[in-house]
Length: 267
Image (cartoon, rainbow, N blue to C red; front, top):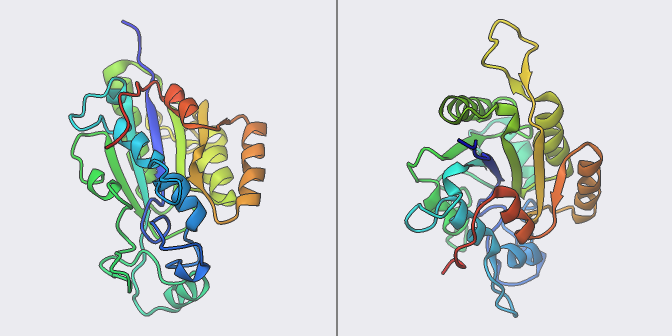
């Protein structure tokens, strides 16, 4: 039996505070300083003067298996939503954070346009509720949210264990692809460098604190990622290649990397 190729999609900050439709390009329409901006929102979520398609949800619709969960190839894909979450507890830390970036991702809080910033953008809010064993949520208040002080490592560990037990696939052979909001710091030190050269603790050798699982195939999807610092984002993509990662420039490359069959555009 041929072993399947397993892919984990790490979907970073696909939330209304960061990525949601805006009424126009005026930066004052942004709900906080960390929002992707009008151009990126149009590029990923569609609409605008050219009535562009929603390429972000189209890919995730396929990754989750489509309407019936049976899109070919999706059974070998996991999606981890890494969500920012902040509680306004009146602390100096919260005050400083909101003062620097604006209020964002406060559970239950609705802005003056009636948008709940903490919730996932568009249909991703509903897909987070899927109970299919391949959809995972990590909530984090910090910068290094893919590695420390969050539930990311336990989720990755559980996927690795399942893949090895069920399919006989070595964890290091699992593919990772990063989409969503990636600053240069997150991109290099959380999304690519950490995964390829530092890894996660090796559950097979629990007594050895130095034992790790490093992933050989790690990609960044330029087509489905955004940054408020586009110039630095492009630099980070160049460095991604230099350290051994793969940059997927368009959605066709992304589908090919994941080994998922494109069935139809999302309605």
